Image 1 (cartoon, rainbow, N blue to C red):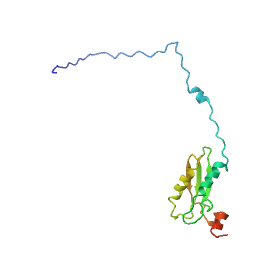
Image 2: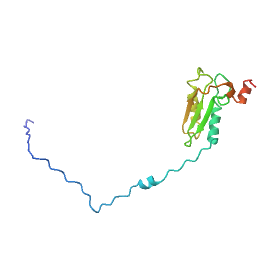
Image 3: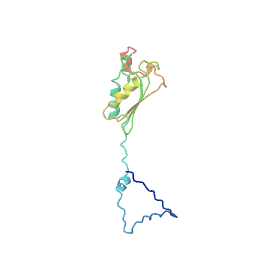
Image 4: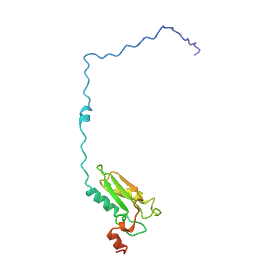
Length: 151
């Protein structure tokens, strides 16, 4: 164990350059397996009908959600301003609340997003809460007005 280590030093004028890589003339490049895949054009998605089956299913899901203060569903109450189904089957819901100080202002959009996202065929649901135009009782459906004794 007490062997003495020796360090040898060699002086050189310059380092030897490694040989360059050469490709022989007989080299044949293999066919790129992605060439055919990349040459294919993507299929155009079928246009989504603005009032198709998925749209109707989302509307039915919205009609199952009730305002906790008013015994009418949020769709007939006029809180839903727009429902859009994208070609990828994502649902975009634009809604409002009766007032900005509504007790469910924080929880209602999340509840709607979960309920709409659970509709079979919907890929992703997104809810946008807007305050313009403000909600007023004129936005209610006749059924809601009848239920509340306003007709």
